[in-house]
Length: 72
Image (cartoon, rainbow, N blue to C red; front, top):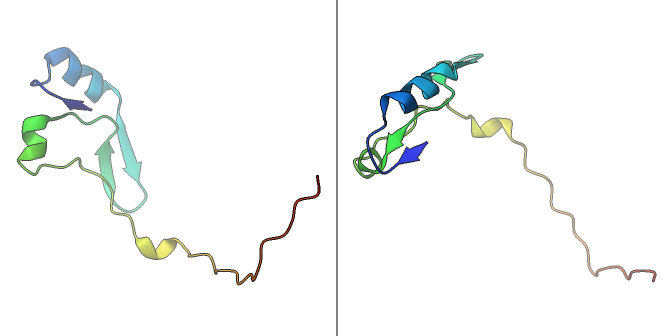
């Protein structure tokens, strides 16, 4: 969550009550995290698991010379 003002105790309680995400390799992370604009401009970021870009495969580009016609 991103907020302009400091989070209230109710906001913190709700965020904490949402529980934790337990990643298979990277530990535990809060499901709901609260950042203020002030924190964002100070360079603080949400605590997120690392994503390894090598697990995403790129699709092979198809070579086509022309686009086929639609049968209407």
